[in-house]
Image (cartoon, rainbow, N blue to C red; front, side):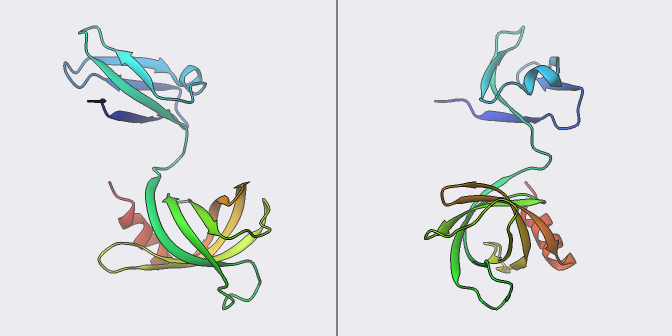
Length: 159
């Protein structure tokens, strides 16, 4: 059985610590060195136990999802013509795939709407700015969410 991968967040840190789950021994590494690693690595403790670790450079935790929603490229917020599937969410951003091919570029501002799969089926509605485009996968940053949507996302993203 493959061991689970433990994420260690490095953003804004000079050093990161790895704690052995077996003996509790702590290993400290320079964040500048581990930020160059872009894949999971196996770290072996002096006690002989090894762990799989991924050094995460993101500012906030990202939750994997599969949520259907809509977006609009037009200025008219009621023109919800385009379908999407939200693949991941964080407090500040969203990653989604478009259903169909549309001319979306970095820097574009989109209106977006989707429902969370929480018990209240909370609707998140706001504006995003596109940060990356890879075929039909869009990475974007929220920039106009109301306080209610921010609060709902915060609860939804709690581990």
